[in-house]
Image (cartoon, rainbow, N blue to C red; front, side, top):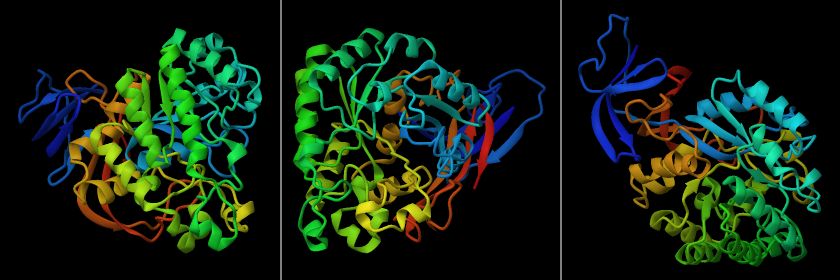
Length: 423
């Protein structure tokens, strides 16, 4: 039996915001209050959460654990440790591994190894075989083997007929399809916004319209097919408007924003170089503000990290040759607290909702809710304690937040009633 004492319990699923004790038994929430809610003589372990928030364990629907094939950057074990250190108890891995997760053999291997990890690791399957964008995978077979959704994240799907058929297949299974929205024919160089910074550096760049034209296509296909569609890592302010429009029409479209897209801009490339190279790129401050507005009004449903570890040697190459992406799991909550809650853009309840309940709801996971009887996946953190980002549990440290002073210290991450991280 575990009792978490004197914490401010925040549970968006029930709109609970109350300083109370929380009791855990057999991996489930047993109840709340000063007295033990069950008649038992079991010994009780106590955790003091005074001054801290007790919330559902964070849920990230967009991570890259690089396993199999790129385990020098990250693997299932180190990725899980990084997730737990960031307060995450459930993550969804993308399929751009080597080999690609486009068949049941690769999927079964990942899920069998994930079963012993300290947190819940789910896996999407690819949309197209070999990420080639030409032939669909066997949606039904992969779903039967445990694929929780489908995505070719890392590469855009440019064939409209293929993506329409993919949406129809996903709709029959009622599983989400997650889309990386960039038209490669419009990009001169991936990873940096086409604008005055890219001009200054002589790098070409990727314009916002590259994202917007793909989103415009796919929200209409989502409306036509009835598919559940996740627009990944939104970078453009006009994309926010398009998603808002799609929702007004009744499309089952979900928006996903990363911490770096609501906290950084293209100007940060001048300071942090390749640590701010990502696909889609950081854009203007106008875009950043529009993304925050979309988070505040509910147009953007989720905060997802797009955790993308790379080695130091890879990131220290010249800009055009360096890979895109940053590590994100261990800084996401702090970036959300610092740039959204402490600047009064979101309440703490709203931030927690976008990092727990909403992403869990997209996939229909049994998490993101800590009402009695629910799974005891929890994070305990002080939202007002500041810290300097100094090191990572991840294998990689490719982060512009390294050395920054951010709010939010995680004291405990608890998964299935077991402490998997102590800060």
